[in-house]
Amino acid sequence: MGVHDGHRKRRREQFVRLWQTLVQLNRQGEETDSRLPALRREQGVHFTVVCGENAASDGLLPAQADNIFSAGADVITMGNHTWDKRQIVKYMEACPYLIRPANYTARAPGRGWGVFDGPQGLRVRVVNLIGRVEMNPNFDNPFTKMDEILKEEGADLTLVDFHAEATSEKGAMAWYLDGRAQALWGTHTHVPTADCQVLPQGLGFVTDLGLTGPYQSVIGVKPEQAINRFLGGLPQRFEPAPGPCRMGAVLFDIDTRAKRCVSVQRVDICEEGRQ
Image (cartoon, rainbow, N blue to C red; front, side, top):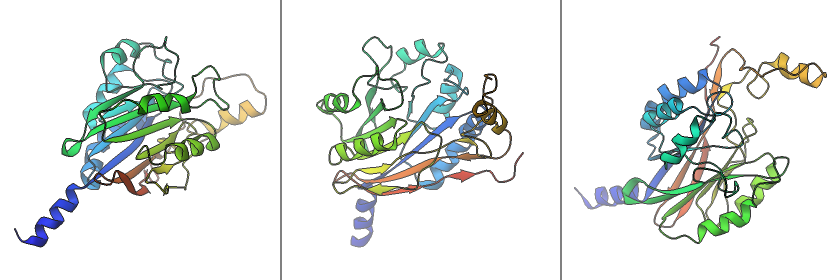
C-alpha cells in the first residue's frame, strides 16, 4: 500500500455516516424494514436511528420493534405516541436500544437516552427529547434536561432526535447545542423541511425529517378524513391513505476527529405511482 493509499484509508476512517429515518403508518413501516439493509449498504451508513413511534399508525408494537432492529436500526426513538400501544412498555424497559423522550417525567418507564457502540470503537450518545410548544406543557424543560444529560461523560458523539411541533423550538435547540452535539433532527410534523445545514460550531441540523408513509395524503391520513375534521364533521379514527409512499430520511457525515458534522443531506426515497 502506497503512502497516498494509506492517507486515503485514514481519511475514510476519520468520518462516519449517520442515517436518520422514521417508520410510520403500517404498510410503509413494513416496506422500510425490507429496504433499510440495502439502503444502508448503498449509502455507506455506519449508524442508523429510526423514529418508530407511529409504526402501528399510533404507537409501536414489540414485533414491529424487532423487525426494525433486524432491518439494521441501531436505535429506535419515540415521541408523543410512545404509550399508545401499552404492549411496548415491558419491551422498552428491557431493551436499552429503544428510547422515549428523556424529558418525560420521572414516573415514565423506559430510558430517554443511551450511549451505544458505534463504528471505529466510537461511543455514540443518542438522546430523544420532546417539545412543549403546542404540545404537552407538563413535560420537563427539554433545554435544561439536555444540559443534565451532557454532564454525563463517556460519549464521543451526541445525536439528538427532537420530537416537537414548533419549528422555532427545534431551531432554538439546535443553536443551543451547537458545539456540544454533532447532529440534531426534528420529528413529529410529518412535513419534510428543506433547511439542512451545519451550524458554525459543527452541529448538523434539519428542522424535520418529514413523513415516512403515503404522501398523497394530509400528513399521512386519508384526505377526506382531514377535510371532514376541518368542516366540523363527526370525529373519525384516522386511517393511512392509499397510494405511493415516501421514506423521509437524512444523512449526516461527521468528522470524528474534529467532532464536527461536515455535511447534511436529505435522501428521501419515493415510491412513484404505486397504488
